[in-house]
Image (spheres, one colour):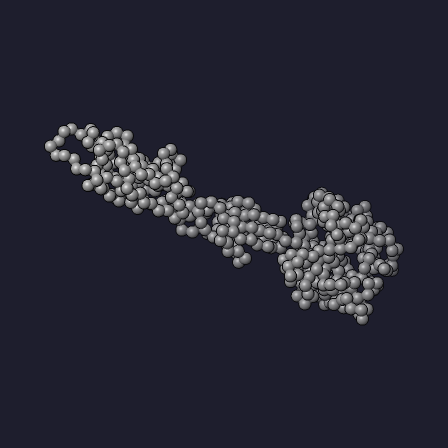
Length: 440
């Protein structure tokens, strides 16, 4: 296959210092997410590079093909006008457009795999150079695509030697909105996806070159154990094409989580897929009787709203606390008993979540939720410490540790055993049930 050539003398006008930052700067160059929105059936299709020609992609799987020079991202249809974005800040070095964009078509010359483009007026030199592959020297600088790229854009990134050039091929005819020499910003739309040149399906071919010792060499933007990059990719986000966000609710209280963008309205939990780098804002609203405490996970803080940048796999939890105490409806026991054990015939209490503990004391001081003596079940009796007439105070607590107001009862314990002889006999306890439902 006759390789396409480009004279790049303009690249030699500046010297770029080595990059000291290990994190990459490239953002996803297409306006869709594989496995979500690129294809109608939701399938995942990326053809990975094989810049070292060993037949393995960075993840040890199959590349686009042996010797594949870029990342291929497939879409469903050209007519969907899927945008192509500049992967980093830079300057447009070369634009080639106007070619047929619905390849393959055996009757269309623009679809031939060995089509040679015309490169007019790029430099004062002849646009021909020695065909020596994907790297070029400082005196006679050439790049060879190795295939018919159809409509394409080449962008120079002088501030990023690890990704000094990015290449966008097989673009849609008439969609290119940038020109040679134009400055572009990361994420700016430069064209739309097509199927021009040596293309079998609508897709974007995205290639990357690095600058090393005055030369531009084809490089691998992905990182993995079977690629040239083992630990640090050139992508700004990992993975670069989608962020999976799970939002959950925790704590003892209740509430709802929404997003200002309208993508979320969570019950117990919900999920969101977003392009990496998307700025999202969540809002936590407690229900009546609950209080919002704060966020956990990828969105820390205690403010009811939280703004974060979507990336990778993120889990965010909104913590709500139940601050509504339970209430005692009724406690019933005899007013007078002949022993120190008072039977409890009724103990009714309610809570917005759950009553988790019951307690009766002989003091009006509210017990702490961790005080000993709480019972997880309704008590059937109460044992007085000493005989005599006294006030008892019933309490309940909920699962959040909220303690109710007291329910007060008056009772005489051990009336027959400790009372002096009296001409007025005590009435049987069974005839004097005492119901007192006034809160103290």
